[in-house]
Length: 157
Image 1 (cartoon, one colour):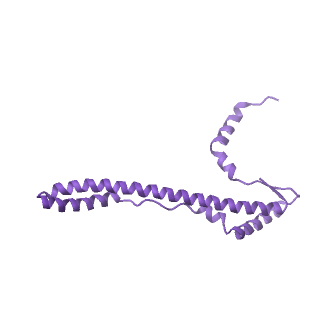
Image 2 (image 1 turned 60 degrees about the horizontal axis):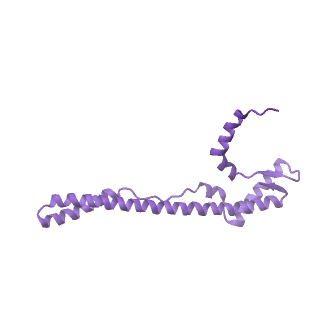
Image 3 (image 1 turned 90 degrees about the horizontal axis):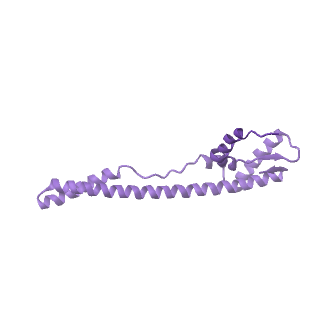
């Protein structure tokens, strides 16, 4: 039998590219004791409820909960306004309020940008921590669900 290698290239690219992470997350259940499709569906529902009660994790809720932390906007504008006000006051003492306001606005814009980047990094770190906790919770749930299904006579991979 001759294998057509060209036909397998797109499949290999699909598996290596986008499908592999999805396949890694899917669970395959095989009824190893001849259970019907209806019985399997019933057992999957019962194990869902049991694993949810046992772990306190509802995978439907966890999967839909997206990380929410994000940096505030407008810090550069606020920094410029605050800097201009301080600069104008300092410039008035020196006799040139306009020049002081301009210098203060530039310094305030830079300070606002630094604060914004700092908040962005903190939000990204918080989101990464939240996502890691969600993955750990899902792993705990799936371990319980797999144990339940195996206890009911299914092969789970």
